[in-house]
Length: 105
Image (cartoon, rainbow, N blue to C red; front, top):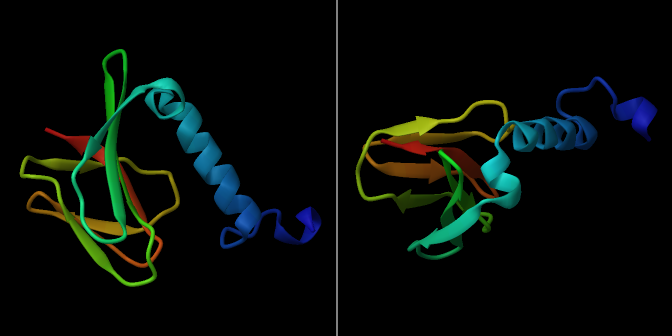
């Protein structure tokens, strides 16, 4: 019930609210053009562009940890979406069913 989940940061309700607020902050996620990035296994990666905004989105659709090589560049994570992951040296490390959102400079 909403009354039980409301205010609990680990609840599904609050996770969805966090992610919807994040999506509203980045118009490219809602209506931007999409360009897929090659990735292997259970991962999906793409960029969304709208106007001057470009957001890189990386998802692990599997239950095991995965790594996606984004081909170099400085990775700048975007905060506030509620998923945890690690970025380093041009690649993203995701836990099972994880996601990463950011920019590549």
